[in-house]
Length: 216
Image (tube, rainbow, N blue to C red; front, top):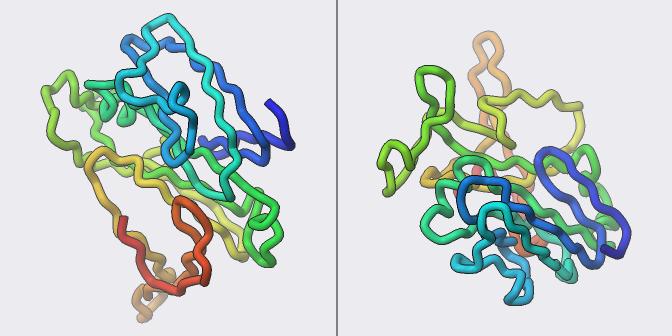
């Protein structure tokens, strides 16, 4: 690995580096194939469905990290159980920065740049995670418990300042409509608040967009 910095925060991986070499060791009970979604990885390290690592084996992955600043994500891509593995948690952010992005005035960084992976899951009566595989579900899965970064119905205490929020739809079937509401007060109903849309998955947008909802 060469370059500047590697960080782990909020169940994500953040890079300000040139090249990453990562060793994946399969400790699970089934084959795995790590795919970095949105990266122009070379074919041997792309993690296509049939390029599996067997249980107890390992594979070295090399990522060039030469693209511009962007929000990528990684997930298991093994044939026949990609969705099950992602549902069980084998997915997360892979964030890349560059000098141009870090130099933008007023763009929140560091602790104020928050990745938020959204999923929906089901639980059994004993509190264990409901398994689509064990229950014969192979079409879709609309869980009734929302998770953010692996936590069900989380609470995040913020400061009175601007934040950058990066949203990832890591759910199996569910889509999302996201918006912000001001807190309701006596005789004053909640009100949807506008916010700025500054980037999509591949890059920053050329012009900041003001909106009141995001569908994805």
